[in-house]
Length: 432
Image (cartoon, rainbow, N blue to C red; front, side, top):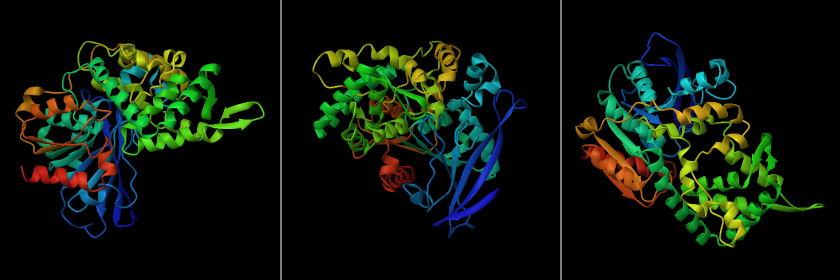
C-alpha cells in the first residue's frame, strides 16, 4: 500500500483480488482499486468506515482534492473508502482495448454480464473483512451507487451499519421500457425549462441541428461522428445543477465564419467531443440498460424503441417544421456505437447484451420489507435520471428507510450541495 498526502487528508492506495464470477470463487480473479481517505489529524483514530459507491455505471470513484464536496463532512466521523467498481478507474479495465482478450463478442458479453450491482456488492463483501476487520460499514450510494446499495440491503445487510442514498433509489421491478417511458417526459420538461431560461438557445440549437443534417455528420475529435441525434444527447447536461448553464455557454459559440461560410468552431467541436465521448467510461454505454434487467425479457435497446413513442424528439420532423429541437438525456442507442470510435469495436457485444434473457433478479422485496439497517435517501424532485415516483415507491418498500424529498438540488446534489446533503442524511439515520 502506498500512502501520501493532500491538504488536510492522508490517502492510501488499496488493491484487492476478487473473483470475476463469485459463483466460481476459485476461478479467474480480477483486481479492484480503492483509495482510503482519512483526515490528517485523525490518522490513528479508531474510526468506523464509510464506503462510497459512485454513480454510472462505468465511472470510477470521484477523484477529490483535499476535502471537497461531501468528503470533508464524512471525514469528521469516518475513514472513507472510494472504490473503483469493477471495470472502472484503476480496477481491471473493461474496454475496447482489453475486452478482445476475452475472445469474440459472445465471450465479451458473457464477461460483462458480471459487471452489474449484484457482482459489485459481492466485491464489497469480499474486501470488507480486509478493510474493516469484519465490522459492518456505512455505504453512501450516488445514483447507480444507490442501486448497488439497494442490492446490498437485499443480499448482504449484515455487512452494513447504515445505508445512505443520493438520487439512487431504483425501481424494484420495472423493466427498462418502463424506466425510459417515464424518462422522456421528464427530459422534455428539463429542455422546456432550459429554453425558458435561455430563449436564445432555441434558434442556436436548431441552427446547429440544421447544419449537421445538411452534412449527415461531421467528424470531431478522435474520429467521433457528430450527427443530429448525437448532438441531441447533449441534453444529459440538463440533469445536473449547473448543466443548463454549461449547455448554454456551449451553444453560444458554436459557429465561426470561414472562407467557406459558417462552420462549427474547433472550440465547440472539442467541447462536444469531451462531453459525448465514452472513451473514459465505456461500461456506461455497454451495460447501461442491463442495470435494469432482472427477468427473461431482453432490454432490446429500450431507450431507442421507447423513443419512437415520443415523436416530438424526432429531429427530422422538428426540422421540417418550426418547433424547438428537443435534447435527449441519459440514454444509450445503437447509433451511439456507430458514432463513437471507442465503442465501435464493441457494437456486436452490445447487441448480445441487449438480447440477453438470463439476468437474475437484483432485489429481494421480502428482505427489503424486513430491513433493520438504518437507511435514509435524498430523493430529488423531478430528477432527470431517476424517476421520482419509482424512488418513492422503493422508499416505501424498504422498512425503516427515511426519505428526504427536496427540489433544492438536481441529481448531483451530493456534489453541488457540499456537506449539507450528507449531513442531513446522517442526521436522519442517527435520529430514526
